[in-house]
Length: 227
Image 1 (cartoon, rainbow, N blue to C red):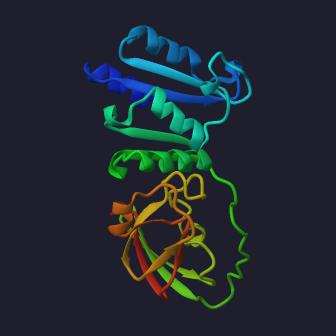
Image 2: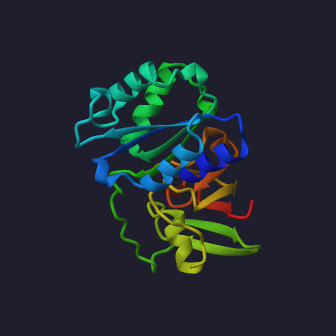
């Protein structure tokens, strides 16, 4: 987010950025020095709104958690939604969902609301896999121009977990459906995703899935990481 703000202000002389930044207290504010530097360089175009959940501030509006009610009031007082071209949300799942709910209420176009999740509760139940069992599904994976056939003893296992046994180079990071590192395109067959916090609806419509959350529905699936 900090990189996006710096790039927009530096490259677009007519751009204006308002950052609503939630932290526990003043001492825990991340990147405070960098943010102060941006305020000094672009005093007329960068507005920093600091919200502290565990420290009282002069204005009650900025003291407390960034829940739906507080976000709603901040939009009423500080950020007229009609003046915003693009919305960028980054934070834990609950906060991002609350912000999305409020933005939908005020008529923000979902195509201009971008998000990134960095924490979500409930990693889901673990799956015990008997690799000696006959396959319930067979997945063909294309990665870096090489095709690999992956036999899955159970469809309850994620395609990523099964793929890693044969292709340790398969890309992934969070394994929680948040980062999007393991995205791939379904070329043949059908899969279902347990969770998705990273893909937009248009990507899903094009057959993109998160391998860490994908499970085969059909007995045979072809997945292309290179597409």
